[in-house]
Length: 508
Image 1 (tube, helix red, strand yellow):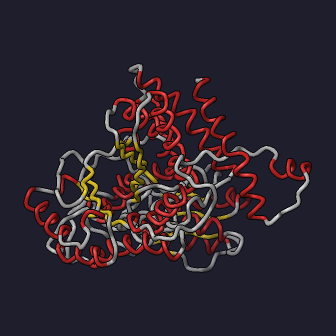
Image 2 (tube, one colour):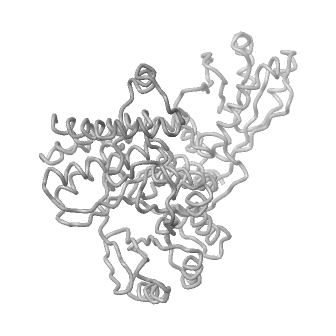
Image 3 (cartoon, helix red, strand yellow):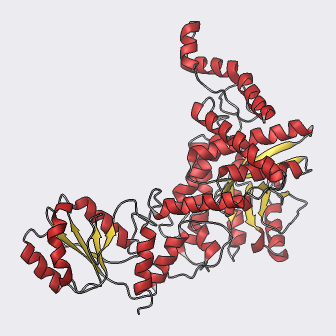
């Protein structure tokens, strides 16, 4: 382990004077005393990025269109026109899922791409088990990834460790290393920087001559079926972070990809072509209009990123050594997976439209296929899809006290039940007269009743609970009341929603 730390420390020292001079030049400080200089730079960890990084931040004279990419999930009748459109738009990287390809489809793809005026510039990435080849353009069938760890719900350290193990076991001279990028913007950057360091360390120690090209792949772990337009933002975050991190190739995926992967998609659906076009335009806008694709190292000198990079390098190196010794780390991966699930179920991590801020009018009406990758939002989606097939119960919120003071609790409760697409009745007013409040409860026929008041009023309200006709009674807050289930911030909301689905899921 000392050699690894020494390797990273040497990289820091190699870049120290360069970072200082670049910083001073950018700040336009020409006469800076040693004392001030030390105070400014004290405590910084020095950049460890790509070994191919140039000496200063600059804009390259030529636009690197190699990074413009398109992902094809489903291959339907529009394939020929779609490929032609992408080529005319300057796309030179294409990502295909191998299980969607057969000999006939591949011959069609090869024929279309070969007509491009310089097909040798095109690079096609095949994701999956099946392999294809072409004499006209480059086909990359073997991307070294930590897919097994990532798909099982492991964290960044598990993913990087598995990649490192595979790099050690590989005998290829040109290595394509795939890193999954998601919504964790800074972690994405650190992961890509870390894998460059790790692979360079491996090649150096083994005395191998090789070239490493990093491919940023789309992680669907944080993507959703409901609120699918949010996937555009998730894809944008992943692509932007990959550009900043200096990935050699970046996969950009359409917001509708999950529907194509997990359900039967209608090719005439408005989302099908729009999704792919938005993915392509995302790479163009970020690379060229935002200039992320033509700035050599936009994150050069960031203490936070270098510190995080160093942490990922050292921790994943330890796990890699355990993997090489034959140790099973699957219990750790399962633990990381469960932690992610609990973060979603308790709303410590928010997924828009899944565990908060739902669109109750959205109805998908689809059957989900089995998948081989972990996606925490799916457990919520399965509940809502099951509720779509049943008679949806109505929810009434019985408010007692100051309406403005109860607004936070009211919105919390509404969001809670709307996650299942249920209609929540809020009359926009609250009751102050307790006798009228009790009488109103006797007149309500909704299948679910929620009592909402301040904690000081709940002891009085308790005597009105027997007047409620339904047995499905909830209370907003932590006050304990007989025959009422509590709803409060921080609890496992999934369990309560699951009980509702069990109660009403079979009703037509």
